[in-house]
Length: 112
Image (cartoon, rainbow, N blue to C red):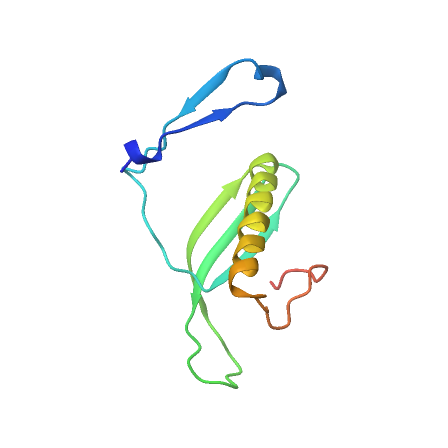
């Protein structure tokens, strides 16, 4: 599977004349499901918290989210991830229609 993921890429402007080969090693990769994500940040890092909301009954007053994974990124990787996600979602919506996120606002602060 790792061989199938070999791709060529061009590095940043400082290496425009040189081409790199990137090999994606997925031998230690794990998969996790998440239906909840939260984000926190400092000057040096962006922290993504993933988990599972197991509120099965509408109208529950207390909801416990079991956090399962934390990814800690530097701001440069977070920016690249943001760009990649925006592109993937734009393509998804072009194929399947708009994704409506209930109650979401881009400017709203994350819940604590």
